[in-house]
Image (cartoon, rainbow, N blue to C red; front, side, top):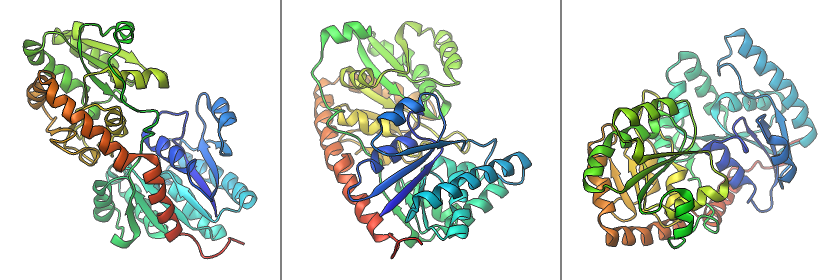
Length: 390
């Protein structure tokens, strides 16, 4: 069967949804997979090394609606080019990165060429669409026309049922995964920790875009209380985003600049080293308006590296861990719970060690790519078209 993956967010562009599509589809057995992806810096080098054929085109629109003439024109241009590619590739099915804008383009292609489509759903794009009457209406049309919807969590499935008009039978849940052969535990390395600037410190790590929903600000606000119990604590923030100046100013305001290290965007090797050498991982996520954490791939990456995790109760993050067994699930709308739970774990190496063992086990059993690929192949086989598209 030939699958055409259609996604604006796709590597090397940073984004958990694009990484999910890439890592999953490149592992499928017995499928001929082609990709149409948005343009981004460094894509030529990435595409040259890819085992999948990738076509690049403009898929980032001013907004997702069609009433704005500029956006309507962008949809038309994308549709014309996609129509040519579909005629050339002749896919049996299109897998869309999101309901909007990709799913709307696939809906038009279905009406033009009869190609069925499947939409992947992540959570935050659905809550964003629900803030607009136009986007809500378009999302419902796409959901109605899709063969099936693949939700990244049960939480996202509930959003689809409640706000997008999806039927229970049309939505399947498939979690993103992690490569446990790369993300794996490693013993403490004094030389490496010295190079990272972590010597003699107990390190709490957060990986993610610097935006409010990720919660870096709440952990910074908790640091004065954490320092009173753990004076050697170091909070390491990996990632970039518009919120960096705000976080830097907040660290100065709280007088904890010496406790915060901004590492920017690391290489893949350095990212894994950070996971392996930290003492505790935290993603203190919370919902900000429509913006929520759809899943939290970084949480399963940290657990694959044998690290206990702390996550907020918001969005789909609770489905990435087992509270009390691989980490802690807490309210992160204020710094209070972080100020209590973080030092409690840092002061208890025996409990961290037990959580670490279970964290690695959870990653292997539930989130390892071979496990999820088998689930995906069974799911895609169930929704496969009966015959080759003419």
